[in-house]
Length: 253
Image (tube, rainbow, N blue to C red):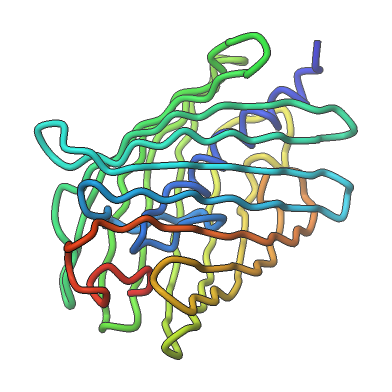
């Protein structure tokens, strides 16, 4: 059985992995942590994946398929799988998540959404954590926005509750390039001090067309282990045929 410290890291990893996968086809999304308030069109799907390597030899490989369905209202459903190595020990977490938009975004006003998720050990089926987050997005223009996240995490392995937080800035500075910078984390009591220290990421997304994009990201303490990280991520999108115009379905801003 993993030590208490390792289990705390794994639960933190699960929570942050959900934040990292909390985006949609118009959000920061993929391997970025701070979510935007939008969701995609009903009937659209995507597959996000990324690998992350840390200076302390920790490693994470994530796959996150998702689709938007109409369950009385549009809801984005996803099922993230994270294969993670911490201090030489391997673990696999599965994180189902549901997200819905409550207030549409627009230039000069806030949009708001809500999502809830749980983390499970893929080997034992144990429920490691539950969490809920409210993302809010304020669009400064068609090319810049600010994302704010606030939420709650219940670490069931040690029966502790945490505040989840995040703030991010996205800037589409060319037709195919977008820059993101963000700080995020969880606040509360922990036996591992780095778990409750702030986390940071910044990176560039290259999106040559509506279907495909690739991210290159530098991160600090992103899983609560006090290390530096490099992440490479991709997203493949399956938009609705005859849906909104391509510009409105754009994964940028």
